[in-house]
Image 1: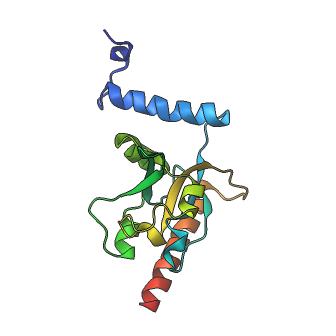
Image 2: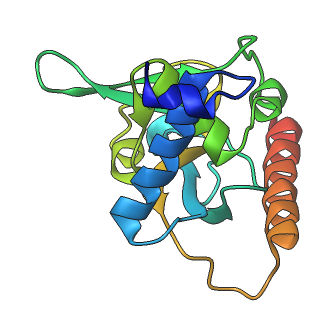
Image 3: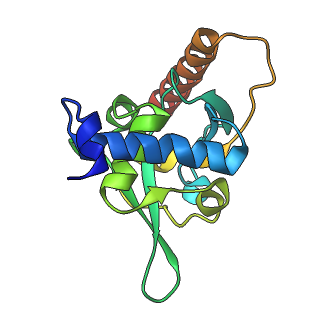
Length: 172
């Protein structure tokens, strides 16, 4: 009998283990649970009107999901996660999700969220979902230094995304 059987929840024991793993990782890496993470340009070398990197609240803010993984030859590769596949900037932004959900999507595919350095190196460039010109969650924690509430941060992020969308549509 597994120790997890005492903690069965409607989503099952595996879900409980993943949640514990997620929060344990945050506590072990940072000494406390981190709730803010960088959301960065999905591919800075994409040559489009790219968004600025922001420190975003991982619970209420939203960004796209790109997952990194090590290949057999030791290099790092990237995959974009979107369902249904996005074919425009508006559809890409519609794929935005919370940090926890993005982390879980990568975990489900035996991958991890990319770091800021990996995104800056353009390893995700052209991997799909129209995520080259949108904000993408990174695994890098940050501390929000402003006095805004998480709701204000989410609205600021949404406003920035809407501005990016409007600018792109105006130039096309």
